[in-house]
Length: 323
Image 1 (spheres, rainbow, N blue to C red):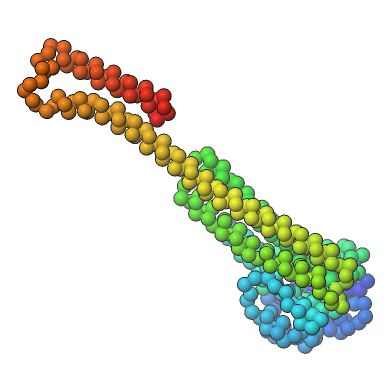
Image 2 (image 1 turned 30 degrees about the vertical axis):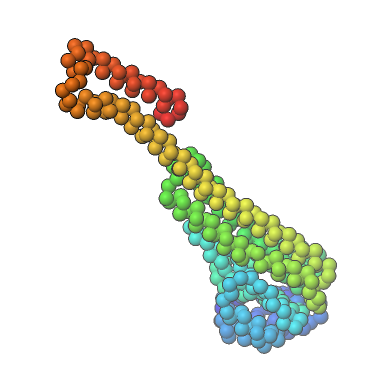
């Protein structure tokens, strides 16, 4: 059956009374009244009950029983069916909780399929603004969509904070494999967030164009406000994703630079060591006709040449920054 989170009837911007789910259609038919029902994980029986009471389209009920890949808006006569997703991030894992919204003349029904942030806060906000709640179902619909969009902000900010911390770690030290894996995971989460945010632009645009009995033309600026917020959220996600990509690129460049420095140092010391090795190799060929072998000061001169050559090479590499 699922759990009934809240069910109430409203009129003239005020809450009239709490009701049972079976009383919904009776109150919805009264002029100037509308019911707002919130369910958590309803099953087919509960949705069938709602269908009988509010004359919901059978295709909308079928949609509500399915899992969707992205937010969407469907129209069935003078009623709406909207699929939204709220992000939930716990212990670094990102999940999306699907919510279905049925809206029509006299009713707004939300069906949340998971444990996301409760919509009770939306109800409290609406009840605290009776002048706007007086608009009825369309204002509740706006408040729900605006709340869904708000849920993305703390998640994106948390990811942004992690990426900035990793960026400082990469700039201050070596690029670890764990850092690369974490950055890749965060960048993938940003792509998933964008995948669920982007369709909300289409949903809000569609709500501005629709001409339904329960949607007042004066509410269109509110749905435009949702569209603006969603667009900004997409821009923020794109910017954060670019930072993650650049952090990986900068880390790879810094690591390549560090490896290049090490390779130059190895090359410089190899060149310095090659100089005495070459001289020792020449005098180690055991030819008899080598005049220097019988010279009294030959050994000391060769050592001096080796010392002078190595010192000169060291000074040259030091000046060029290789050592």
